[in-house]
Length: 71
Image 1 (cartoon, helix red, strand yellow):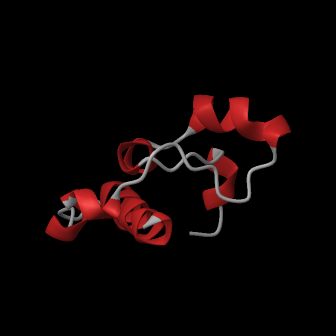
Image 2 (image 1 turned 135 degrees about the vertical axis):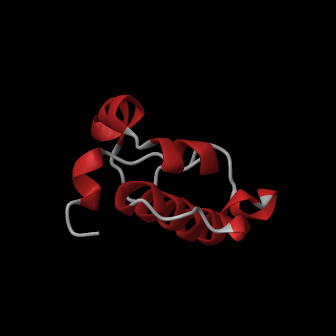
């Protein structure tokens, strides 16, 4: 379920960033989780809470914005 949420968050993020329509499957609740910090050490969680992109927050994924520098 967390991996589905991560893919949903990335799909929503890229759609918002590039001006596309958000795919319908991103809105599906099965692509959401509860406050998951994938590979974010505890020391950086406050940063992830502050900088988390909207599409990721909606899906329950928390990452620092710099994690998307290559997306």
